[in-house]
Length: 239
Image 1 (cartoon, rainbow, N blue to C red):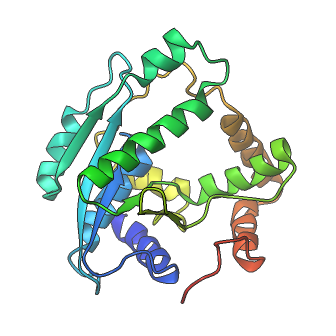
Image 2 (cartoon, helix red, strand yellow; image 1 turned 90 degrees about the vertical axis):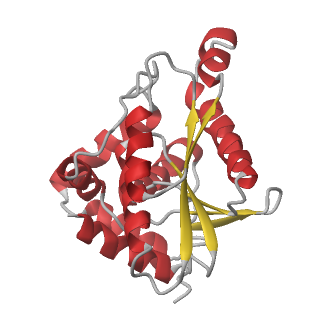
């Protein structure tokens, strides 16, 4: 099943010219299925991709009691991928000090800042995040429902303040395939005990899209295709 994922990842990387010769790519590994499958894919693709690159893994530890990353450390050793864990107090700041009523936005912002800093410190100027095709469609729909605009994160984003480029090589990969790959490879998924997990606007939109797909099968594929056909800003294929 990893081969199917690799075909999607390679095509996405080529379509958007995500990898340059000699890139040191830091994979943001949260411990979830998407980031672990992405790590496996980019580690495996080193063997045959026509452009040489290096892979590292970085985990931003939010400080949630009970979260451990020992198994991911062992996986990185098996894949011959350097691994860095950055310990933070995100959980304490967001839930105990600030008691945020909408914690996800602040958490995401702080995690982004932490991984950008960690990547730069490791001399990695490319950061790979595990957003899959379903994530993109959900983001598109969330922007329409909650913000009244048509937008989504881009396949490739250059951040001039940090001089890093963020890439999303899993964008062509359906979540169902990611889930199946993680299961078939028995990847060491870290359970997320975050109090806000599963109780978010994104979860609501995910379930809404699932219901719509029962009525109009293939709706997510068509919505994803619409972003490329418009195209949305930053979604123009390079090749």
